[in-house]
Length: 95
Image (cartoon, rainbow, N blue to C red; front, side, top):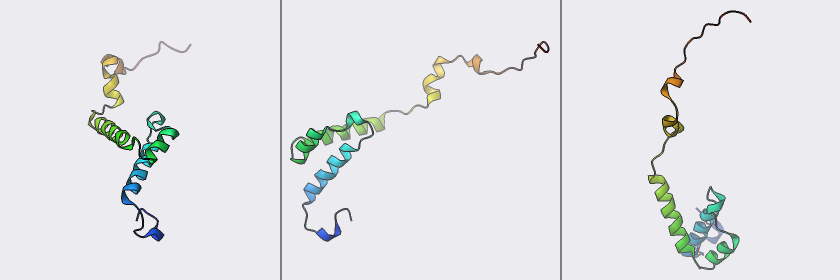
């Protein structure tokens, strides 16, 4: 159960869902994507939550559709393949 068990069913489900959405917006990975405290207050008062939540969901779905590249894929065109070949060297003698 997500809600306090002492409340039983004595809570507004829509209000609960809105509070959870605000909490999720506040815990996004990148700090720049998190709402400011003044925005949080407005969203809890019922102003702008729907728009902010939809924008967050669109950004998340776009991110999940973006192709993932490993670091070797990203930098493979920057390296010369011949530089990856290791050849044995023979030293001319002690120095």
